[in-house]
Length: 85
Image (cartoon, rainbow, N blue to C red; front, side, top):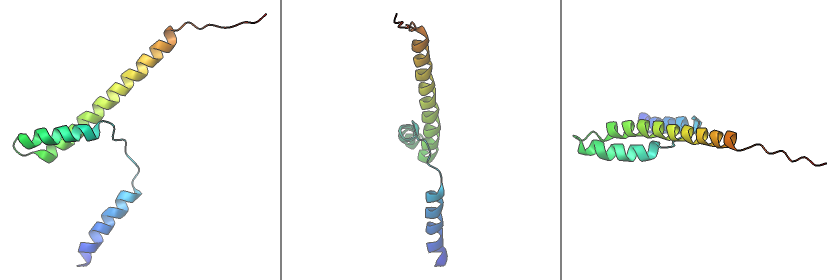
């Protein structure tokens, strides 16, 4: 009986003590992967995990591309200096 109470309390304590994770792309990927995995021989959990990994990777790639485009725009803009006489 004690183990039935101790395990959920331990899980709750560990979840509260962990650092927040960035889930960009993971949630959408997990949903899509879970659905695809369900239709592919009932591998819902495996599909969700793979979808999360792929979704997170794609979100990081899009963020990096956006950052590079911003840097290119900043370097292409002429640097105008206003001088007052």
